[in-house]
Image (cartoon, rainbow, N blue to C red; front, top):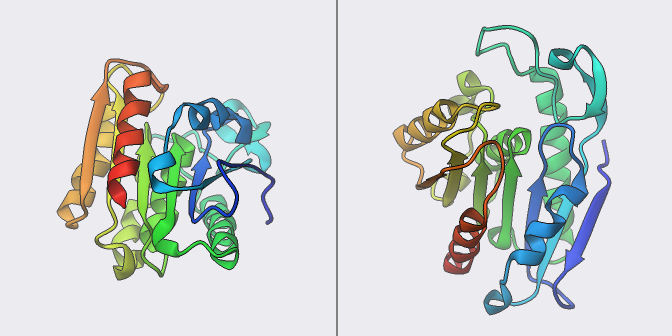
Length: 220
């Protein structure tokens, strides 16, 4: 599965890539305004890569077709709610995006995976399993998918990769308790998690974008 993607280079020959994964029902254009707010000139030219998820029927929305990284099933069983097969298909497609950046001359340690909601789940899934050390993972308003498999599947290469996690205190789409549970699990596995929460719903706010900006500047 080859993903369509919007790309923005802040200057020629970027040596840093930030791959941004949108939420359910959105597309690659969703984070263009956020990229325009970020000022990363201090770390040199940056390439923002904003792929669009495939269109698929989403079970919790009555089978309505929309852009989604994976299907969400109408069940209260937290271990079966996120469809494993579509999660793994999207994981492979995101890996291919990372590999493409490496082939274009960007070192893995200069690649950051960032995602919101479903995109957050994919950033954590792909980032923890990637076989080379990445620069960082930014996990916004989401959760850890397939936690029952993560411990066995995570790769030692990213054990020390910094993770920025953020959530809205008033999020009624993905409850902050799910984000906190993901944070606690990652910390139990000795990952470096920088946690932030904000007085907002299922969205982003200016303070959050500013905190992400500073965190990115501090990576290198």
